Every structure is written in structure tokens, then in C-alpha cells.
Image (cartoon, rainbow, N blue to C red; front, side, top):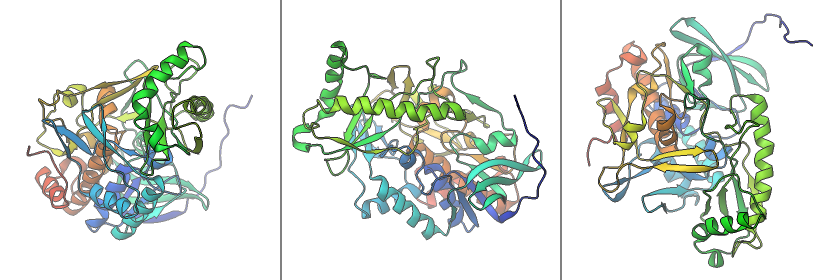
Length: 447
């Protein structure tokens, strides 16, 4: 059997040269690109799909988590800056729901994915960010051991090279950093990662009859399973209405491989299996939900374009955020913003939440700039769910709010590094913090 082929060498056309190249158009990438571009830097945002939003759109999350925190018993929005601009644009399009309570301890905020896509396009245009859709990153070329020179991408026009002075990896999987040779970790040290899910939405629900169905569905699930009529991939359901009330989002799948471990989003074969498995689980869950009052005439209106990946590579940075940092509401001198979301561990068969002390604590931890800087490189940042965190801490700071925070800081840091002729690790933290606050970001230095 043929195990490898030797490809002929070739000259790869250069697509262009930029001050800042951002890989990945999720919340971290959106904020990074806007932040860099508004600082006056030529910026390219590279996205594999034909729309922005990352897991929020491509995986159908339809729900902003981590924008708010429970501050001594008072629910407050703690993520601002670029996030505010995007939220306002989604709201003007009629696609933003009011925040809804979760467990009586915090809130999340639902949105319409179509409005998110349009709002993100508008935001990029307003900041003069150049966006390249349908571009899949494939490798890097180094200038030296410490500097990335170019990112190779595959497009419908063929293979191209993106040359930039600085790079920000917001790929979620840490692809760019890993190709460059950055150290990274996967899972909890025993190969266990957070389980992926496939999100879907139902339409045709009667809002009046459904009422607070999310409170009754767990009991109905338990009854159906005891009667042997259904088997559910996990215990804790998330079934909540969208703004219209007739449409609800459903998060009740859990994708495991043949060994029972979480599917690996960086393994092409497992990722393919996960897509089909997710749809099989959705068919069963949707059938069960028709038994819920108000859901009798429901139907699947949308299955997310891709599996929702929660964890793959976590790139080792100058600092690694820990579980204790989250639960103890840690402070850092180099804060770039805050995370107000608890630990949300998608474990085998269930979801486990671990909270800071509420309402005794301020309910959020600082996110240090150092978690975005891989120490091996001078012109590379990592922002989003692949930033430097332990397995447990990543279950909290992987959500939208923290991703906005890390991305916005990385984009401004790239500008400051170019302006001062220094490295990612060498920028002045005071200048970064002042710049972030000038953009409206909240650094967690009051309350």
C-alpha cells in the first residue's frame, strides 16, 4: 500500500503583504482584526467559511456566553470594546435577544445567526479590514526560528502565501502556532478533551404552551429513558427560545469516538465521523422533543454547518490560566479584560459547572496578556480557545466573552509591537491597557 507521495517543489504566489494577518473569523479573530485595523494597520482576516462568527455561526451556538458576570450578586456586562460595536449592529438588525438567566447565577444572550453574519460584515467594512473567505490555512514559512514570515492558504484560486509583519492565531485549534513549532497541550493530560456537540434549531413551537419548557425537559428525559424509549448522549439539556419564541435552540448531543473519548477536532477522520454521529443524535433528540408540550408540531429548521468543537490544542504561553484563577477570581497586573464565565466541563455523559463563590465574590477573573504570547516567537499571538490555559480553565475562558477580550488585546498589541519595533513579549503593558480602555474595554480594575 502506498503510504506517502513526494510532491514536486513549486513557487507559491504571494497574495499580498500586510502589517497584521489574523487567522480565524470567530469572536477572537473579529476583535483582533478590528482592533489592529482601527489602530491604522493594514489587516487581513482569513476565514475558512463564507461568513464570520466562528463556532457562534458555523457551529450554531446562537448564544453569547461570558459577556456578563455576577458581581457580588449583581449581573453586569463586563466585556465591552469591539464587542459593544458588534452587539449594537446585531441589535439594529433585530437579531439580539435580551439576556436570559442561567441557574439563577448568571446570564447568556441569544442572537440570530443571520444577523450576526451581516453585522460582522458591516463591522469589518467600517474598520477597513480586508477579509478573505473560503481560505483554509495549510502551513507556515519562518523568517527565523522566532519569526513567522508567511502563512500558506488553500483557496479556490489555488495555493497562496500571505506575508505579514505580525500574525494572530485565532483559529481555535492553534493551527498556525502549531505549524510554527509552538509548544501546546491537548486535554487533561490523559487524552480527555471537552466533548464536542452538534447544535440544531427547531421551529414550529407554540411559545405559550411551551412556557419554561427548559425546566420540565430534564424530568421528561429521565422518564423517557427509564421507560426505555430513548437514550440520551448526555444528561444536562440546553433547550432555550430564540427571540421569535417559535424557534428554539437545542444543545443536547455529545460526540464520542469508538473508545468513548471526545472526538478530536484536529483528526480529519474523527471529525468526519463526528458530523454524521451528531446528525443521528439530533434525529433522536428531535423526535423526543415532540413529546414536550408546545413542541408537538416542531421541526428541525437548521443543523449547524459543522460540529461544535470546545477544545483541541491549547498553546503554551508566558502564563497559563488555571482552574484556581477562575474560581478564586484572580487578578493580574497585565490584565487585558475579564472572564466572568464559570468552569463548564463537558464530561462523559454530562456537563459539570463549577462556580466562583456567588454572591460573595466579584464573579470574574482577570485575563493576563501573557496568556496570548507564545514565548518561542517574536511576532505571533494566540487568542481565543487555543490560548494558554489549563484544561479546566479553558472550559471557562473558551466562551465568547473571553475570546473577544483576548482578540481585541492581541490586535492592539500587534500594533504597539510594530510601532515600537519590539516583540510580542516586549510591548509596554501600560500602553496596551491605556489603549484598550480608550477603545471602551473593561479591564476589571474597579468593582
